[in-house]
Length: 354
Image (cartoon, rainbow, N blue to C red; front, top):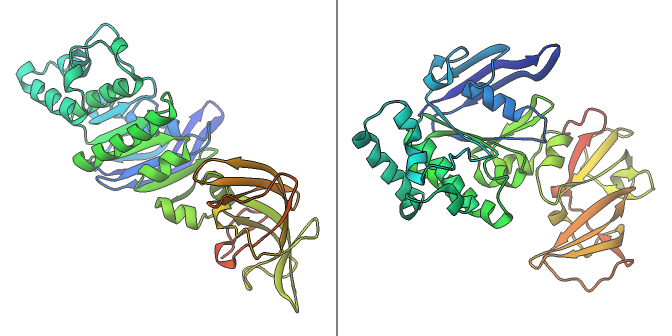
C-alpha cells in the first residue's frame, strides 16, 4: 500500500493549461474518488499519477518516493480502464497471467495468485473461456483480476463502469468496494457519475475546469456543499436553486425572488440587500403546510418516489415525495421550505454563506 501526495501539480499542452496547481493528500489504504464533468481534468490527473502523462509542474510522491520522472512500471501501480483492454485471443487465465509472464515471473509463483484472484472475483469457473464468451461485468472482473495479480500498492480506476448497463453498474460498484475492503490498497477512482462517487468513496474530490472545488466525505459534501458548483453537481435529482435579494422587515428575514415570491431564510446569513442564491434538495421540500406557491407541470412516478416539476422564481424545481399525491399536471400547491435544509450562496462568487 502507499500514500499519495500531489503538491502544486499542473499540466500544460503547449499554451493551454488543463490542470491548475492541484494539492491533494491521499492516505495509505484510502478510497478516493475524483469526480466532475467531462473535460474537468480528472482523467488527466490520474494519468499523471500512473505515469502515462508527463507532469508539467509540481511534485508527485507515491509511498514516500518522488515519482515525477519514474516510468510507469516502476511506480507499483495497476490501472483498470474503461475499455477492459483484454486480449480477445487469450483465455481469462492467460489474460490475467499476461503481466507476470511479460515480467518473466515463474508460473508456479504467480499461478496461486491468479487462482486466489479468480476466487475472490467469482471467475474460477471461467478461466478457460475467451473474453467474447463473457458478459460485460465478467470482462471487467477479468480486468480487475489482472490488476490484483500484480499486487500493486496503488489501484487506479478510470471510469471502469461506464460501458455497463445500469444493473451491472450497481453490482460492480458493490464488488469494487468489497475488493477494496478485503485488500485495503490505496485506490484512486475517476468517474463523472456522482452516484458512484457518493456510494464508493471514503473521500470525494470534486473537480471543475482543472481545479479542485471541494474535498470531503460524501455525506459532508452532500449536506454542506462549499459552493454552487458542488451543490449542483452532487445529488440526483440535483439541488433546486432560486436567486433574489435579502429583505428584513417586521415579518423576518426573507429572500425575495424576481417574480415577487418571498421565502423565509435564516437570519444573519446575509445582509439586507445582498444578492443571494437559495438552494434546497428535492427530498427536503414539504408538500403540505407551506406558503411557497408551486404550479405542477410534470409528474414522474418512479415507484418508490414521485418527482413533481414546476417553476419557482423563473427556474424549474423538482420536489421529491415518497407519498403518492393525488395531483395532476396544472394543479397548484404550496410548498414548505424548512430553514434547517436551506443552503445560501453568494450569487456572484458562488461561495457558501454560513
